[in-house]
Length: 178
Image 1 (cartoon, rainbow, N blue to C red):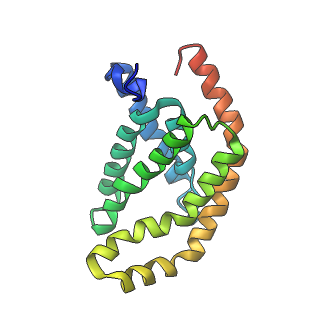
Image 2: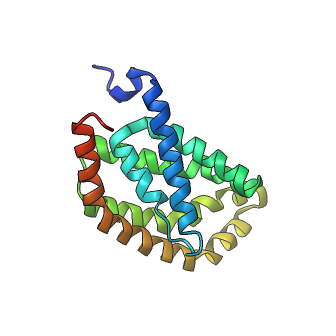
């Protein structure tokens, strides 16, 4: 395959791919709801990292379905558009890292933490378009304490769960169960 593209894209979509995507979305939603009471503590970032490492670009379908489900669940507004670009940004970062051969848990924990730290900034970009840079900056700055919590939570969740989850998923893939 000389085109340099992800081989998973060339395969197309099977019934198994659709079922796996549905399972990914279910796991994302269940984990999000389970931790809703804890502000900015979530497993979604970690799960997107793991899914991307094992499913590559096909994870984008789960991200779009997850974003749509969130819009239906919470209602539609300008803020709901952010999920349609924040998760693909993370998937892109993981794909770049994956292509460079990165497999260390500490690397992905750091990426996860940094992503949590800048999540509020990414989410505030719509206010830049709608209201200008001063409103965007104020909106983002007001959320920095939550972004710090998000950073710390993401880092430790990924640091603790990366190795066992990666081993489990690799074992399942080796048995053709993933």
